Image (cartoon, rainbow, N blue to C red; front, top):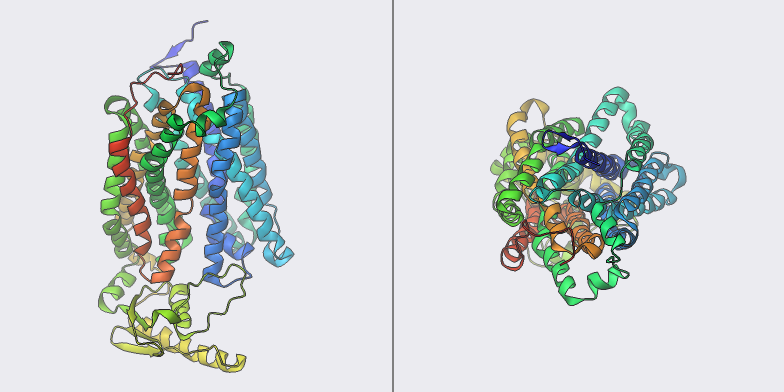
Length: 550
């Protein structure tokens, strides 16, 4: 039967792209709601620990979903290579939608105690498993329907789905926040999660209309499918070598650029620059709206000049410009803190042995040394600082411009004396920080919205460079009989581990050092590693035949 053409794409091709992409947008919406609401999630489910630890712990729960994505890739990748692409990503979207809806119904820490974060993390794990099987299925399904010479263009629509899912989550949050007002942080935050029930119904209905991939149907009919895709993918050196190289020379760099440009930028504005959530969401959403078409532009360009040069160029540009871009975001989003840093830098003068890494997952540790007390206050109030070594046993001091504030050792004080000393310390340092020009939050009237959105857009443009062509590159790297299993694992280790843990690692690096830009060394290092390995160890694949096994 002939398929009627509409423009350059047949109706059937448009249906494949639309149905696969829309379902994946909804799945990313489900997954990223948690990240978009991390600050509120921290208060609702991790209120049993101090504020800094609570936020890091909330980020770890966010990252837990990423941690299990490689396991989801292996489980669902194997199912996809044995049973087909379509049926597999039907299962994954049902798991994702149901898990998200339950988050919207989950009682808080105050209501059910430690069971609340335990159930929340369990739901995040289910989401991660589902997403581990979703992406590979959707990307392969679209690529195996694409004409030769247009795989980058076809699969680039799948690549827009993660950003569109994030954009959709931000948009729903903004609308709900505006409608709910003060009630949003109390219970209105649950509404975006509950909306997932309706999105799930739409997604399942649309995907039920699709036929199985023609490549899989032909392979199955000819008896060429793999009976042991895990063994062929990971226990045979030729294919395992490709898996390792595409992980280190492709997806790991792509992942850190993606999460720096879209998620770490969000956390940086909220937690470090203290821009209010609504303003932050508007600026992030604006940058996503402007830059998203470039996923398709770079995907189409990769059909002409290749996948590798665009991805490697994106990694190099990101590594070279992250520090000036984030310094620019500070200068134009919270100019007061930027000016205060220049005029009145803060320095903690202490011996390193007296300072702890202030992460307390169970809320039992006591950070009562003079160094811990000083750094805890600075981290909690997002005041950037530098460290200066002092002789062992020297009482910790904080230099704020030309003013010296002395901390105190609370380890051997009674509760009453500690409270009195701490109150006195807080009063002194608050006054000194305020006099030095450090703001308690960003002043909306002083934000240069145009410049901040421009800088955020540049970050997202890097995302489109590394992410737009990568689905086609991954599909072309592996033979059809084990494609789902082989490509899903390096993608989800890269994005689930290298990328998913980025906000947690980078934020913890900032808290540990006091340098608000120090966390950028993590994505810069990984992006440079990918640029080197990708350039010298990975092939260009745009002209490969993917409709049969090599």
